[in-house]
Length: 629
Image (tube, rainbow, N blue to C red; front, side, top):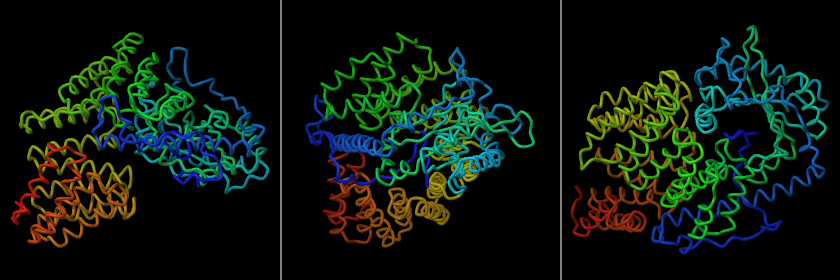
């Protein structure tokens, strides 16, 4: 079955590469010398991130080559790549760079959709029109069966929300949700190239094609090939009301490649590199190949990168260093260069320049430079309000980020003051989002969660519970009861009840979160482990130390298997196992667990980190046979 990804390409699971074909050029294995030039050479966690990056990059690029080789066997003459279909829209963009309003998604009354909820409401009502078009296609295309032409599930709302942000945030006219064409989706699998050509001919004559992408000629970045048609459908029983749906046309032999070459994990990992309309897939693949050939991240490579004069290319590199490599020093170097180029070419008052200030602020926050981060985010906010106005989704996002950074900063221990400042930003973001996006929106739910967190820190537990419950109600209505975000909502509720001393209520919420996570992710997943840890801490507070130890050991087994035996998550489990053992009077066993936690934290988090200090205190207490407080 076809799984749709957020870049419209097919998601396929990760598999081992077979040894029946050459692996191409080998890149040197990562070692402790890869990070040089004085930038984090002693940081074990950063070295591990770099190693993981090169392992994924090598596999990703190798699979690209292998898929190309397979395609040369499937379609040696390039017939599928030569299929040409003209759109009927004449292109989506006007000469001034704006988009044609007639191709915005409409609500059920024929007005431009104002939010994601209106897009989904229209999608439900237009399904039959898409089904009718597919049935006519099956009747006309020889050898195509009804089972080959399916309407798949609507795009999940969380992924739709994310794609709207990544791809269409600056598209004019807005809102970005009104340009999502893959909410209502269908999959057509052809057995022959002749059928592919017949489908193209049928749609050219019988459908209004808004845009078409032949990805046999220009593959998706995952390497997958298909043809994507976005067709305009008339709403049944309503004049002048339409909706645009997606028809993804596959060749069965190409579709089978998803079982042969797994890219789901790589798709997620490299997704930020390919997000946005400013760089083509080919350009980004070329940039990644530059990194692959270098084989290591060092000052020589940085010099080459910083010589570039294309701000869009440099912005991609900056996000790569920030999000994939987590090399924040070098990311800031590149972002600074991007900013210089943008301000000289497009000016300071521009959406792209604002985004660069935004990213710089987020990286500065990761580095603990909170005052600098707040200044960068405030600069971003000033530009966005001038470009988009005070009431726009972009401004709401930045206000939320500003609130998060204020919380992280602290102010000489005056945490309450920080949360009051953050709460002000969160409430402003909520007002904007409800005005622009409607009350039933994922971003509105996120604002309620932010507000709940600050109210909880300020001691207003009833206010926090109300905010968290409002968020959870929205999440359940949009995502259903069995969803990862819904599990997180129950977990947050449990945390407030825990702080209030309502242990029974907290246990109920934590247990619901665990049940959802086990159903969504399985019993051996990091999120499932997190639920066991939450329940274990609660049981510790309830002085049920034996059951608490059992829960923490379950979390530890998962974390050591799925993450790493030397990870911060594993250290957390060791710490709480040690605490439970200490409370039961088994100081020797507690000392063993706390020592493991301390050694991991000392290596990864540094000697001065609060968690490392906590582990050190626990080690000393158990060495002396004392009960931990």
